[in-house]
Length: 116
Image 1 (cartoon, rainbow, N blue to C red):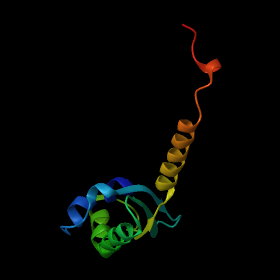
Image 2 (cartoon, rainbow, N blue to C red):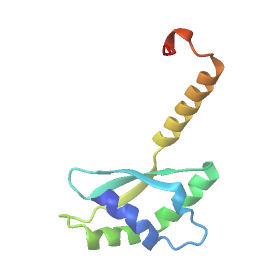
Image 3 (tube, rainbow, N blue to C red):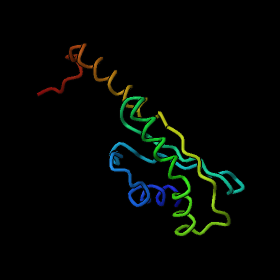
C-alpha cells in the first residue's frame, strides 16, 4: 500500500519544473516491524549527477510524502520515510547489456538451429 501511495503521490507532491518523473521508479518499500519507519527504495535513470539531483529533490519533499501517506493509508503509525537509491535495476541492465554483447560475439551453434 505504501509503495502505491508514494508512487502516485510523486505527481502531486513534487512541483519542481525540472523534475524528470519518467526517470524515477519506486522499486520497494521496507517497513520496520514497529511500523514507525520505512525505507523507500528508488531507481533513478541517468548518470550520478542526475540521480543525486532527483534524489535530493525527493528528499526535500519528505514531509509532503509523509502527509500524503498519513491521509490516504490507514496504519497504526504514520512511518517516518527515508528515501534511498536502489541500484538493482541498473545492475540488471548492465548484466543484460553484457549478455547482449557476448551474444553478438559468438556465431550461432549449428546444432541449436531447428531442422527444416
